[in-house]
Length: 170
Image 1 (tube, rainbow, N blue to C red):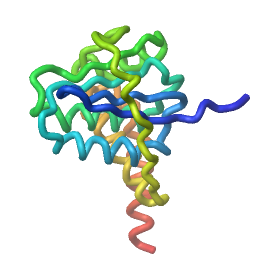
Image 2 (image 1 turned 120 degrees about the vertical axis):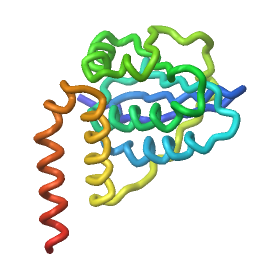
Image 3 (image 1 turned 30 degrees about the vertical axis):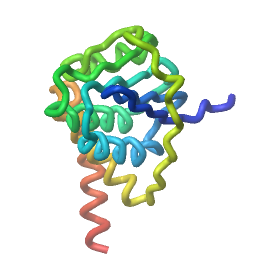
Image 4 (image 1 turned 90 degrees about the vertical axis):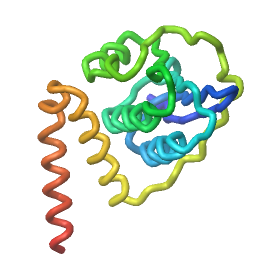
């Protein structure tokens, strides 16, 4: 079986920023998503954010943590909650369990189609340590979203924190 490699596309038009995730979106793309969150927070003229997950076959918890970070980065800059477009029932259920409905408006189809504008974002390379830091940050963000996530990701965060402590003693 060929894995459908994950890609992140983006477009910015008339104040609307579209982030489109395609394929199998995993922690390998977290540096790209993190960079995007930082850039969005500084984007002048930003009025709306749409995250399109219709072509995503899987989104791992690290990538979800960075989607939450993107939403938090723009919450003071836009008038409405960011929108997630998701038509896969499994992905939708996962987002609901994780508490994304609290931070995003979820819909099955976009109001307008802008994805022909989308360009592939270059993948931001990250070394092992930077990736581990981002995984830790993503899961800390998810844990703050609700009690279910806190219980779900506490063991992983504690393990990563203990590795961090161990590696700083080397």
